[in-house]
Image (cartoon, rainbow, N blue to C red; front, side):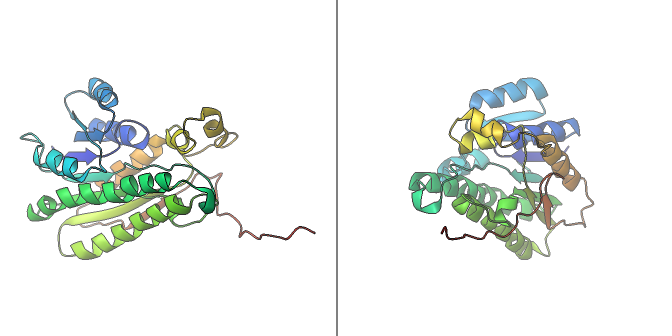
Length: 252
């Protein structure tokens, strides 16, 4: 039975990905900071799910967690780097440097730490394996207030493509998955620092993507033949499209 490790598994995309993989016969290691959420997911999924409380932005903790995986859970075939967040939607000159640092710590450093800890054994085993990195349309299409968040997701895309270039000739595949507007997660609640009304307004009158849409896509990627590498997938709901170019006009 194949083994997957999913970061950011306590809610949203991560929890949905864990559910879909487990339902398809995978054994899933789920990491997140909120141990109680992981335990609830374990109660739901059962013994096919291994909760692993972890802050991916803590390099030493990531190394220890990977090295300390129990017997029977160490040969990870699928890594889903899902942990990530956006904080704030202020213009760059009024944003908080602490918010910028938090996004870099999770969206970039966390992805690097987990990938670096798992990649050597994925390559050395010589078996087919897959890394799916969760990017965002914000890494491709700028919008107001996405300054550092968009920058971190642009990094995720470019790192993923360069990682694939490095791994050519090995059986390890790499995909970057880039969703657009997606409801039913904690993304906007975190971005707006717990302002649930403001977060809900983002999705009013729109049939957005769902966490299950993303999870089904991850499962589809994992089910492709070993010789197929999907480089990049960008997803948007039908209601969303590319913004027009902004023009700042002077007031008379």
